[in-house]
Length: 458
Image (cartoon, rainbow, N blue to C red; front, top):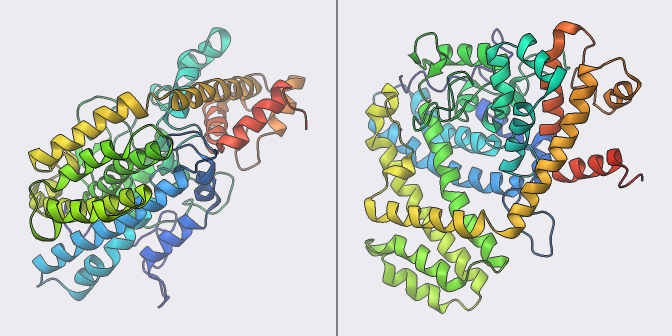
């Protein structure tokens, strides 16, 4: 891959139109950010669970606030890495240096903003609930699923993946005549595809590229065209497995930084972790730092702050600043591996051993005490039941389209999710139902579930 080819401003669905924005106020890449932040799909993230249940007496992060914070960190990472690239390649044309100095931050910020846009309600349990439903089909539904869907289509649903659904949400036109979905630049779209493979080749741990999947079979052509424009090589011929675009590592790093720190901040507000425990974890990041980041300086300011919430805010800011600089340096140290598609570790896994050890400690504590906390488990179980019920009803409707109940159920599906009565349309109908449910907020899913089960009729 070449830095010169990786930042095309060509947009999905606009292959034959002007490649750059004629506007002087907003560049093509800034417009990507604006299109995402003003979209209804992004707004709905405000009522999708991040980790802890919503809403409550204590405000915790939802998918929207998390995405905004990741975007902020991503912008800093993009600026730091972009400056390093521009400084290294001083003989490149001005357009090259302008992009990496001033546009790459917008691309990474936009990618971060959209990285969770395909996630269903109720956190990661929403993905599991969709997978479980299709894996547990029985009878005639199971028979039709096996006989009428291709292996790729089956696996798209059996291994439903929020990352692949984000790419679909951003590029699929649904029931609109205008092609290309959000019509984002290929540079921004490529930055969110953490697992650049289809579902047939994905889900083979521990390989980072194929750990999950990055696009469904319906969006394979779109990704292939994007990869061709940006010069992303295919790693396995005829298996739809591609190298990661280098910008993906920066989007991933911003997310890796944020969720580890922010989940602790939320856990403190809910009384799950103490300020002393947070201090022990967070201050350790500075044990071997010097100057501005020396531990004694950080600890002195920390102890002088009276309010515990402000103490955590202070440590959060200093850790983010520290990690942005370290990870952007690691990004450039790994330049050869990034451009050859041979880097198979996230940037955060390449931190110095002493800081990587702290990351692992935070991960272990989070799994034991946060992600398995009673309130988190309760909302996950609710998600299984609600999503499972909604899928059962709407899949019944597309499997038996002429029954009286099916006709009523299909009236509840918005027209943007196309449902056809044609026998050959089973997969597109199942995907439309999944699109509909995955796009729901937690509150909408609960409300629809209550009304359809008769718990609430108003």
